[in-house]
Image 1 (cartoon, rainbow, N blue to C red):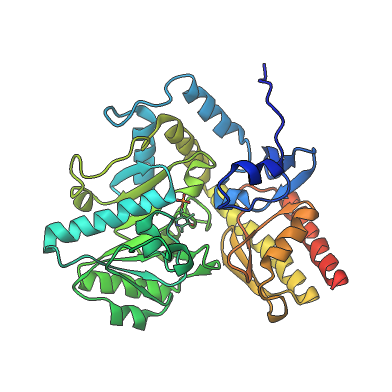
Image 2 (cartoon, helix red, strand yellow):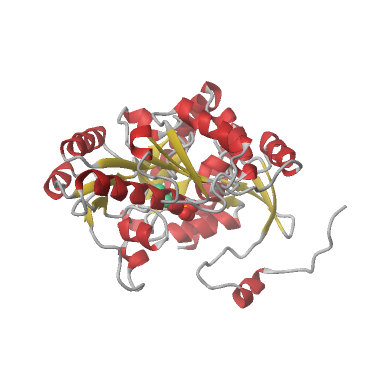
Length: 407
Ligand SMILES: *Cc1c(COP(=O)(O)O)cnc(C)c1O
């Protein structure tokens, strides 16, 4: 039995919606695996993955099953009670990581908000009110609440909203000397993305993360890794910190954690978690049973050698073809990133034209992302079929060849 809806179209967006987004001209209505269909029935290959969210593609049978089974049992109960999916997912995250304690919430920004508040509370409790400074990287992205845009290193997102959160210093990414110069005994946390996502798909150097860890220990500051984009299998390991072997004190996860259902988590140790005593922090939907039931199904599938090894093999498949396109058409200078978080860096001639390539790709039946104006970003399903990779990249090549012909 399907409900009859009034017809809607893209033009309605401009009439009814707050204009903070500029969505594509077509409206997707259905997805399956790595393919999406729009209102006109036109099919597209999806390498955007809902911005690194649809970790198992669209309508994965195991996720549909987890969601619908839970939907028939219990949707929401609040944190006045706990629930079974929350406890099971927390245990799975703890078993698979450094963490001993989990706080669930609903978005990456909220997970980071919790991480930053925890860092300040720990410093306050242990060392007093003077230790509150947070050091973060320029070009970093940590979400859109006022605290998280203030910590984020992109002033275009934080300017013009009145006074920012105070006590935040930004330093260039991958520059250990700059971190060494900025950190002091007033620092309560150093916040880093192990791979900068929005900032251009830029992985950290191993020595940088190791150095950051040492400096944090020396100054009694917490090392916070924002793995909202890099985590949950995206980089070919469950979390990117495991690739580097540098263990943070606090880690935020979201995006892929729910495979498309909104959920996020802050992971930490028992010693640190105890500073968030009853009543110090919370959120109505955190640990929602529907969200956690889906998260459980995601981690069960993603945290397997089969899927994680597959991510590494698929990375190579993307890289080979992208580098061939880059050389043949002079459009990319190369690729960077890890696993299935890949950036193709535009050559000087194409600088600033990531959006032009996105639009041309969409017209050829391919959804991709940008990471700033100079990087075309790929964040497909971790189980994208090799045949879909080949066909999607053939569409990209056709789009680029078309742009060159028109120029
Ligand atoms: C997307 C993202 C966020 C924000 O997540 P939301 O769910 O949009 O609040 C934070 N940090 C990183 C690294 C991200 O990529």
